[in-house]
Length: 100
Image 1 (cartoon, rainbow, N blue to C red):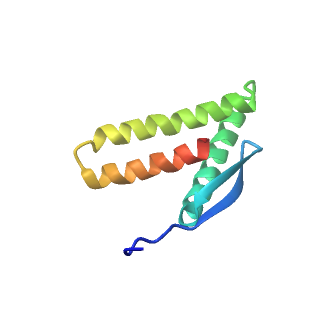
Image 2: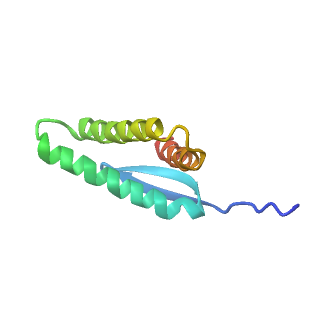
């Protein structure tokens, strides 16, 4: 195949805020995805402890908003650095896969 290697895909199910989400991912992305899922769940749990009057969906939304703000700030800070921009694009793609 002209030196092009097909990526191995894998089906996994992750739990985010106690809800299952089936994903089809590149097998090589699994460790990063699982780490992101853990971080999101930890943020949701922290928001639940801080804002006890909010439901889990509100806490999930707030957690993901913090990631979006951080990503936006990082993109602004390194807009002229192609290497960092490529890494952020990969992170953005991983997050998109988690949310679709």
